[in-house]
Structure formats: structure tokens, C-alpha cells
Image 1 (cartoon, one colour):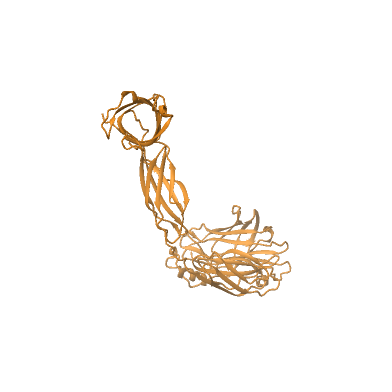
Image 2: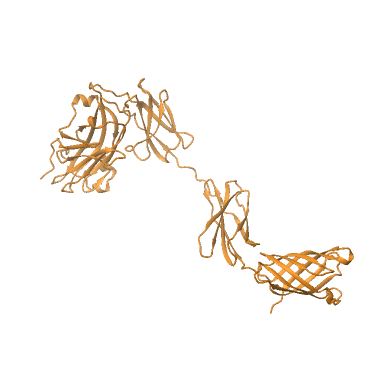
Length: 497
């Protein structure tokens, strides 16, 4: 059986939860001619074995009791042998679609002599244009009793038929209003809409207001084609100029309509403006010469070079990971800062660092480095020590320093000094100058106290990361000479067993 061409519909429409029966629900010619289009969704949807683009959105603003509201659809049947059946659902956006009416081949007119497209599944531009040209007479539903508030309403055509070769092209769905006397309530549409790009990316719109009763204007924009428009702004009466400061790159299409106290005008002509792409801003260069160095007690000092000579870098981001983890940001510092002190959680671990520049155009590549944080140092053992009077070149002594770690102490040691000889004169030392010591280690910093009744001393210094050498300065006190202070420079190396 061929798809039939009679224009009529018998069904049941449920709109906003209420049901009415429909039989040839076409509005009168007079009403059609005076109807004011509140909103319209003009795009081609196809309902066949698969549904494409079959949801239509209509927005009502300024609801007025006493006006009639009409939903109008245009489309046409196309197909081969068989029957096409489906369902129309309507509902206010934000609610479940709660209305439906059935349709079949009688609902829309198949244009005589036009066959099915060669391949509608590709939905190519020629197929779309072909469908628009073959639009049938409209079908209308009076939904006056079922609209009670402003909102966006959805109309969905869904195919549920028997034969995939038979389907419906829906080309438009409109929402109209007619006043209680059947007189047109529409405002006159703006005209001469023009669009041009100025001071990229701004698009300047101008138009002519043709209705003194307009209380304002709504601006719509589509950044893909002339089918899908979204309202981007509204402006008050008296203004016929608007600047769109956030257009999409490429072609933008615009339309404007006047707004009244309770209705809208038809849309103006469509104007377009081609927004060029943003100029490519180079990324900031990566920082250079990143260096990570361990320092006491649990700190790593980072330093790098800012390679950006154009001022595009705003800041640097510092990231760290351990040997088995992922990078995490540790800090973001201003571009004027090229160093950072990081605190690590544990000793005896390898840490990896990376730093990159951040600018207005994005982020640079990374500069990287790693650092090994030594385990807690154990300085127990024998140390060869040089002990020099800073102000007396002839007083340079050699000896042995023994350190014994105190159990339970946090980096504390006891021990002995045993002096050997003068490194300049070869003179042997008197054993009476030997004596005990105590030492405290904090990270790689060491403080040694020489305990002696005649020559007490305090020696401060640092230990290398491997715990094999020390160096520092201190003060020795000569008690018998009125507590005379002697400046000391000292160094020590651990003996290998």
C-alpha cells in the first residue's frame, strides 16, 4: 500500500497533563492570516527508522489570558510502500513530555512526484534543502486551554511505524497567538539588520525600529547556520544598536525581534558577520637550568632561570613527585621569583622536580631535575681533625676526634679529643690538653663542645650529605689568660675502617 496523501488527523492530544480530542484541528484562514507568531523553530527533522533533529523548542513570554494559542507544524510525507505511524509529545521544559497525539500518513501531505532521497542517512545539505522546498500545508492544534504560564515548550515527533521506507520530514513548528476578537496582536518586525566585526571579537549590530509600541528588543544568534538561534540578550526600547562581545570564531548569524507588553514581533532579516580567529600568541619559553639541592634539615633549594625576555610569563609552577608517585603542584610563584625552598616529608628518598612558566597564552614545557635526600646521618666513629688558630699561622694542630652516638638521643653524641702534633713545627702535644666532648647534629649542622678546664671551646659546622667530612668555625677560651677568646677554623674527615 502506498503512503496516502489526504490531509487530516484524528487523535488525542495531552498538553500539560490535560487531554482533548482532535479532528481536523486546522485554524480558520482568517485566524491564520491574523495570527502572531510568538516563537518558531525552523529546522528539518526526519522521522523514519531513526529520528534525527525531531525535537522543537518554543518559548512563550508574556502569557495573556483571553488569547488563543496555536501550535502549527509543517512537513511532508515521503516514502515508498507502507504506512508511517508515530507520536507527537508536548510539554513544558523541565517537565516530562506529558502530552501525545498519534499521526499517520493522513497527517501530512506527500508532495506528488518527489521520490525518497538517495540516502537520507547521510543527511547532506542537498537533502536538507530539498526537504525545505517541499513543505506541505500547515497542521494546527488549538492549545489555548492548556497553556497557563510562560516557559519553553518541547514538541517531539517520534517514529513508531511499520516500514522504514516511509517517514516524515518536519520542517517547522510555530507557536502562535490570536486575541479574543481574532485581531492580530503582533508588533511590526525590525528591519535593515546589519552586522559587522569591529575590534575583534566584537560584532556590532544595528537595525531599524518599525513599531513605536515596542518596549524593547531581543537579540538571537546562531554560530553554525540559520536554523538554530539562541537568545543572547535583550535591550530596552529606544536602542537600535547592540555589541556582541562574545561571538564564536567563524560565521555568526543574528536576528532581532521587537518585544511588547505581552507579545513579540516577527523576526527581522538575518544578518551575518565572520569573526576571524584569535591571533596565535606564542607560549612562554620554559625556564632554564633548574637545579635542586638538598639542605638541612628536610629542605630542598630550587633555582632556575627565567628565559622569557618579552614579559609574557606571569608566574612559575613548581611540582614534585617521589620515585613511585605522581607530580603534584607545590607552589606557584611570581615571574620575578626564580627560586623556591621546598620541604620534603622524609629522608632517604629520591625526589623529582619540574618547573614551568605560566603566561596568558598557556603554559610552557617543563624544566626538570632530581635530588637524593640522604637518610639520617650517623657520625659515630673516628675523625681526623685539623684545628687552627685563625690569627696565628704557627698554631695549626692535628688530632683525633672520636664520636659515640648516645642511644635514645636525637642526634646527640659523646666522645674525646686526642691531640697529636703541630702541623707546622711538628711539636708533639701535651696529653693534658686532651679531653671529652659532646656534639649535637641537626640535619647536616653540627655543634661540638670541647670540655676542658683550661681550653674549653665551641665548634659549629656542617656535615656533607654523605656524612664523611665536616668543616666549620668556633671559639676557644683561654681561661688562664683572663678568658681570652681565640678564633678557630676546623675541618675533619672520617677514617675508613
